[in-house]
Image 1 (tube, rainbow over the protein chains, first blue to last red):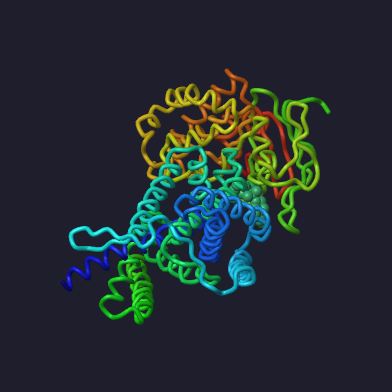
Image 2 (image 1 turned 90 degrees about the vertical axis):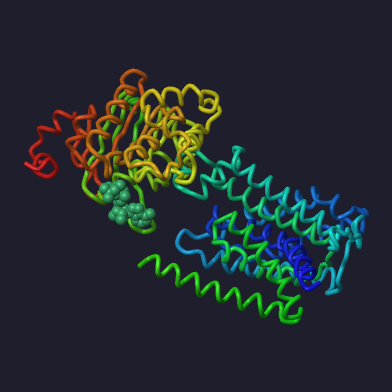
Length: 290
Length: 239
Ligand SMILES: Nc1ncnc2c1ncn2[C@@H]1O[C@H](COP(=O)(O)OP(=O)(O)OP(=O)(O)O)[C@@H](O)[C@H]1O
Ligand SMILES: [Mg+2]
């Protein structure tokens, strides 16, 4: 039965990890193209969860059905922030400016949410709410399963977009060599706006999925923002596949951890492993350098 | 104005407070190859960056085909047909050779002619066709320069600015690229402005040349005149 619990925990972990992976991936994409670490990615997720909540509350839209709308709204929101605030704060030498900007923006967004929605938990029920399927003795929550499936589809779409579309090629080109992109006539500013917008839209998809079985409150982005940083650090900043694997790994670690040591110590375990990874990684890198 | 194809008149460029280019004037006619030579830090790259819109000029003018071009917007210059093949190649290392080339075709016209241009490029550099699905970052330096040159050609330039194409390459590869570039210039009327530290090679390739010293154009003339110039012989040709 113990192993049954473990397998159950692993399955749950993979599903939670899907969210981390997606947020991590969006963080990575923004970093890859603009070379900025976007400290408000967690809050983007929070905003998208409130958007999902509003669509549910006022239009009665199921979180899963709302995904396309949430994605578009978040894309526009992200692109707007990029063109109005971030572009203006990027200095050519050093980017502490942008770093502080994204940090503050995160705090600002959660406080606006606090003002508008108070600190109460808000939920949006999906049609699959509380449904459970039993496979080989394992109980799997249907919203999580559907959510995970959607996250996989979203990830695949992002990969295909990057690989085959003109925009995707321009995004890759700009991330690999900004000067090269300029001299080939790529409108790098447009690419930046799209990238930030797509990053926000990805967080939006994750947020809508999360809303189907979780609740939103103003500081919900904290948890996920921090997690997504752990994810990209584990997987290597800039590596998309790394972020995916890192996200799933972290999710599994959390759920298995809380099964083994109890939910109260989950975070302790996560951060302990994170610190260990940081130290080990630095050691390995130092050895590589010789 | 005397109405040359490309006319650069008294341009000044500053990086912050530091001025690095002073009243630089030069011109190039259609199908002409013009060399811009000088020692390290003379301002050669800055000059071609200014002419391709990559950096802003603080005063002076760039007039191409009768049209006044404002700096700071590379894409606009490209749409007019002025394309820079930058120093250090600046390829996209984790994209294939083919993707690198494709990216160079940015205007509508260039995109429409993409297939033909690529066919031409593979005729000039059969090696690139063999390697078209290889990541550009894994190519040899010479092959990378071929890709850089070809990527610029994908944009269907009327004026091609080449910044130190010979940097770190074997002489025979540079000769290859220069030979092909010259052929295109003479057959299709492509204007080329080439920046080089290897003065001998540059003057052999070019019709005319300018010498840039500390941000000022000090000597100009046809390649033969410059080759015979005592000062240039002493300073750059090493005898
Ligand atoms: N972005 C920049 N900011 C500040 N100064 C710059 C910048 N780019 C170039 N410079 C300065 O401008 C001067 C001219 O540089 P430029 O790159 O045009 O020289 P160059 O002739 O191309 O030299 P090289 O042969 O080494 O390529 C140099 O003194 C350089 O330090
Ligand atoms: Mg230079």
